[in-house]
Picture 1: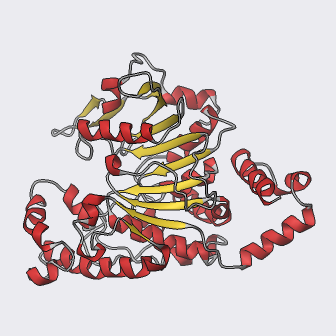
Picture 2 (picture 1 turned 30 degrees about the vertical axis):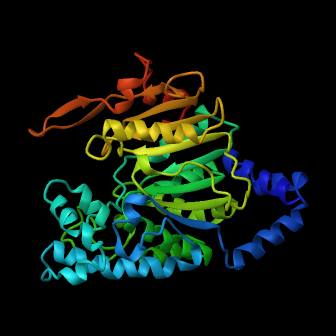
Picture 3 (picture 1 turned 120 degrees about the vertical axis):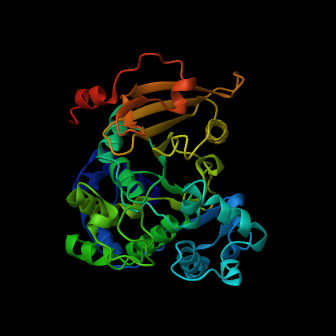
Length: 404
């Protein structure tokens, strides 16, 4: 009976069916209302796992080489990372004198010199260190990306993967994911996710007023493009969403109800090509089997500064390896600071050399500012391998679906 009720609730989340319409499918209206009210009052313990890529596990001293940290140890793990990470960032920005002993409590001593040197050539290493953090969502209306995914692939179950901070919550609200994986190279993004998930477990986002109060309790620091870099920033809606702040607030409140429908949440501290795309046996689904479709929200993380062509190939291979024969994954690319997006579909085919096929479902023109602050068109790694030569635009697909 639980499986039937749980499936019906998920179906309603995807297709916007009112709760009362489920009465005939489950256990009766009175019992549904009573059980949901009781659930809302009770603390929730969502299955959460923290996976760490080998490169990160061997870099950070507080992780001590651990590739997986159980839920009941996450407070201690993130507490140690915050304590020693704050000291390291303060030394990086010369807010306090460099102390090698203190730095080695955060970065393994045999990797410390090379890691510090890497800060001079690329800000990506500052992301990895948690000293330059993109908590603020600058994707313009990614809500539409997920609405389009639901329109193009209706009546599917989804395993969802997303970079960024706000995006995973929006993704689940719209798609009604079976499982949700936060995939990010920045450990502070995951520490913030853990803070939010704990508050959701306590029912802290029951309405807009409560949500605004809860947001202010987040301990976030070293925020990129948010004034002087410092250990802790005052947190409000503008800290999380540069635009569409009221819509962001609505999604934070909606996730409070939708979180109970998730079979599991994974925090995956990894670059895209090091991510884990197989479903965990520890999810409440318990069988390790995938949903009908994997949807991977990339934001702009496959651009060359973050992901090389070789790493991109590894990403595709890892995802393909997690799919059943003829299974599909959908990648959503969103150009930074614009409305432009692209949808790319991967299908596992064991009779090909690569083991998969790629096609472009839709693609807008991607444009960015060059060194002279002039707009230039660009392509992604997908355009170099997709056989689709003249895909339709995603903006046209949004109009056909009456989403814009």
